[in-house]
Image (cartoon, rainbow, N blue to C red):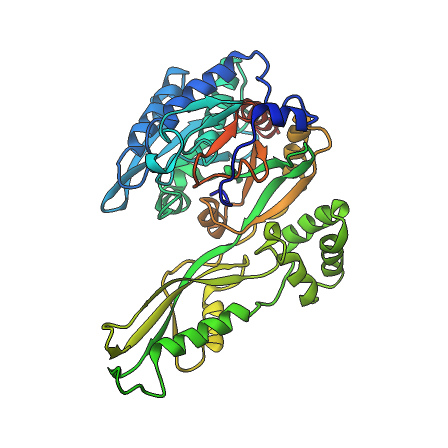
Amino acid sequence: MRIVPPAVAPLSAALLAAALPFAAFLAQAADDPWHGRARALYEHAIEVPTVAGRGKVPELAQYLADQYRAAGWADADIHVMPYDATPENHTAALIVRWPAAGKPKAKPVLLMAHMDVVEAKAEDWSLDPFTLTERDGYFYGRGSSDDKMGVVAVTTALLKLKAEGFRPKRDLIVFFTGDEETTGIGALKGATEWRALTDAEYGLNADGGGGGFAADGKPIGFTFQTAEKTYADYAFTAHNPGGHSSKPRPDNAIYELSDALARLSHYRFEPKLNDTTRAYFDVRQRSEPGALGDAMRAWLKDPADGAAADAIEADIGEVGLTRTRCVATMLAGGHAPNALPQMARATVNCRILPGVSPDAIRDELQAIAGDRVEVTRLDKEQASLASPLRTDLLKVYADSVHAMFPGAPILPEMSTGASDARPFRVHGLPVYGVDGSWGVVPDDMRAHGRDERLPVKALADDVDHWVRMLRAVAAP
C-alpha cells in the first residue's frame, strides 16, 4: 500500500542536485558491500513479476528462503506457505524465524512486507516495468517502492546482522505475504490460522512509514504509521417496475440513484480526532503557515469545528485525515435503450475511521440515500483498530531517521489506505509502519503508477535504517 498521485515528469539528476541542499539525495551510497548485496536481491525481486494471476509469488518466496538458508538459518525456521488467494491466483507467504540467543528477554517482533505487486503493462511505461533499470540516480521498476524495497531492506538487514555475529535477545520473525495488493488473505491467515508462527509483541511493517522531501530539499517529514482506515464497499441500488421509454414514469431508478449520489457528494461525515491524528496535526501545524496551518490549529483547539476540518481536507495532501470519506466508484443500470430502467446500482467505496463500525456507516449511508434506494454492504470487513502510540518505538524510529536526516520532522500517521497490518491489529497484535525509505514529493510518488521508481540512495539508506532499528528492538 502506497498512496498514488498521478505520475509526473521526472526531474533530472542534475536539476535535483542543484535544487537540493542534501548532497546525499542522489549521491551514491557509502562503500558498503551490503548495499551491493541489497541491489542484487532487489534486481532479482523486481524481475520476478509477482502480479496476481501469474503464479510467480512462490518463486520469489523460495528465492528469499534460499537466501536465509544460505546465511545459516535452520530449515525448521523457514516456512514457504503456499495458499490460494483466489482459485486462479496461487500465491505464497514466507515466514522466517531468527530465534533469540538463550532465553528470550521479551516476546518476538514481527517484520512485515509484501512480495506481490500490481500489474504493469510495458506499453504504458517508458521502460520495461519488470527489468530493474538504474538511471539518473533512480531505480525504476514495478515494486521498486511498493513493496519490494521493503522486502529487500528487511532481508538485507537481517543477513548483515547475522553475518556480523549479532545475537538477538528476542525472536525476530519475518512475515512476507503474496496478496496484499488484492485479497489480503495471507495477512488474515498470518493473524489467525498461522498465529503460532507469527505471534509477537508487535509488528514492524515495511509497507508503512517512510519519508518525503520537497523539490527544494526541505524535509516534509517521515511518518510513523500507527493506524489505517477500514476499507469497505457498499451498493446503492434503486429498483423500479420499468416500462416503455415512450411513456416515462414519474419515478425512475436512474434518477433516484443519481439524486442519492448527489446527496452523498455533498455529505460530510463528522470529523474526529484520534491519538494518531492529533499527534500528526500537532507536528504539522508547527511548520505550516497561512490558512492551512490556521485551520489545523483551529481544529486541534476544537475538534467539533467542521469548517476547520473542511478547510484542512481542501488540501489534497490532507484528504481523508479528518473523517470517514465515501465516494461512488462504479455504476450500472438499465437493460435496453428503449426501456425504462428496472435497476440502477452504484458501488460506493468508504475509508472509515479506525474503530467505527462499517455497519454503522451503512446505516448513515442509508439515511443519506433515502427510502427509494437500498444500501447494502459488499464485504464483511471488521472495523480497523489503531495501534497504541508507543513512545518507545517512536523514539527508536526517530533516532534511526535522524541518523540519516537530522531534524527531519517525525509524524505519527493514520493511513487512508490499507495494508497487511489491518488484520493483525483487529486480532490484537499492534503493528507500526516504520520504513526508512524516502523520495521527492510528488515526483517520486508513483506506486501503482507509470514508471514507479526509488532513489538509489534511498535503498541503501533503508537497509541501514532497518539494521539500526533491529539492533534497537532486538536487544531490549
